[in-house]
Length: 57
Image: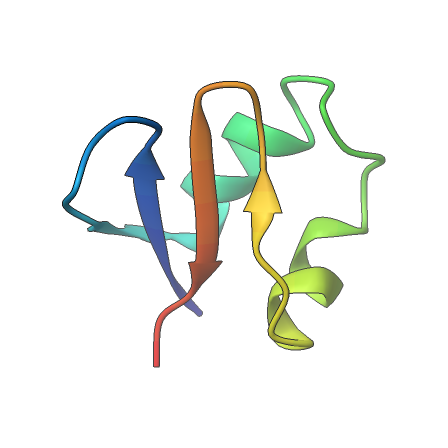
């Protein structure tokens, strides 16, 4: 799965891999392991203090 990431305060989105997204969300301690991929699949945005992540279409 491809994921779009945006730094808060920026206007542009960058395409990253799911693995990169999981590293910056679950492995960083912001989300419980195993939850981020399901949130993205369901169309939800995943928010951390520094970034927003969403599934690339």
